[in-house]
Image 1 (cartoon, each protein chain N blue to C red):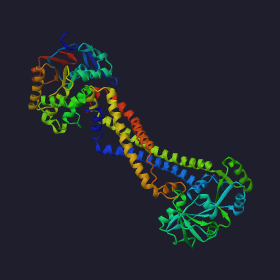
Image 2: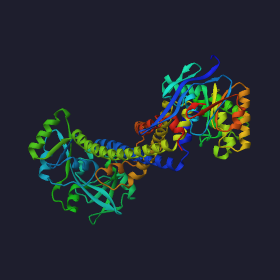
Image 3: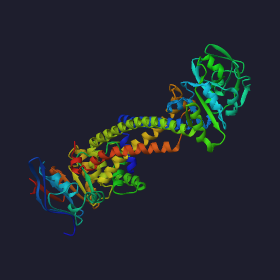
Length: 223
Length: 387
């Protein structure tokens, strides 16, 4: 238990729209070990993304608890929760979600800024992380000038800007061709090898095979 | 990267919208500053004219109101019905010296100019005029003119030139030295000559009165009223009532300008609301990266405040330029003639400049509160899943 970076207990989430209540998660108890590479798999619409949002403190559970480094994050107020995201978590999304008006370097700098890195150190850190994902030459490019694979690598560099305890990725290769997918996967494996905890949500079995642990979510439950 | 840099990057991304929103607040502040600065120069001009008049008391026809008092200071035509009989009565009161003035207008090369018929001997002592070129009137009814310094320059008149007043050619006998007041733009005629040319009969428009002992001012007022049944006011009263009229006009103009600033504020609200919808996804990303609600609120508030500061700064400059260049073209009337004669009109006053920029920033920040609040309360998941 002590080497778990994230654990959940009977985690449930339901959405209410008008009179209809949808149960997205119905009691998930899991544990993710520090330094592990975990894949969350399952069919679309079965609660994978909801689970990832809850693990990363982007959303609050309807019932149950999420512990990050021993802290019950459901009990934190909005401000503390945001601070926790800024300090401990790196998100990567399927649709890259870069800030369109900013260059690759500035995208990473914004994340560093929000994590509290002083302005003077931001550029150095951004350049180092872009080099790490093989994009040192694209630092001044806007997202619209980059390919999908390159954008996703910028997004990974941005997720690393706060030196997070855990990387949470929602279908990071869902929008990429196989060459770009291979590049991204190579970077993730390097990060894992360097000791980062990586959690990846996917419905791609090839990717899941590369993970140490696979958690299967079906109908809002672990299967 | 800092929050303010991020804000500037965001705000300048949509150049068209940025410019139009900025124009709104700029125009609002510019009109505000224009009226403010014109009003300011109006007030200082009135003070200057009042001291240039050099009178302790003014005798006017009974029932004249502040508008006529303004006209005395601006050199506009007044209803003239003070008889020479009354003038003599006032001049007979011991302890005061009174100068009768008939105010009229003429035009030289199609430009309006004030003509004052004055008691030549009394006026010279009263005003402490100095003749710059030529000489002063030799006789109380000499058919010639003495003109102000600025009038001579404006109409290119010299000693020996002729001016035509009411069809009669009069020789310019002298040009006064610059006084800095209304007299500089006035053509002076001996009173009997002015009365004859303008066919007014034996009347004058007002009397300027100096008292020997200021402590007895009230008693002189009483004596004049008893002797003639005319209106008498002190220079201070006149100044007060004139300034109060000008103040009312100023406040009205400033309120109109304030309405345009208000309209610009809603322009900012509109732009910021649009921005919160457009950037919903970005707000979600920033939240995922660790931005607190207060940070999102701050980003949007800074953005609208930026409109206010930049629009305010440009507006102040534009307003001062407009008031400096437009003032001479404003049609002549009792109020605006002050602005005209003051030359530029623009008073660059630090309080006005700083105050206007702060006002603009404040309006913009208040305008940004609601959109910023809307942006801040978005839930991260909702924002990030927004297509």
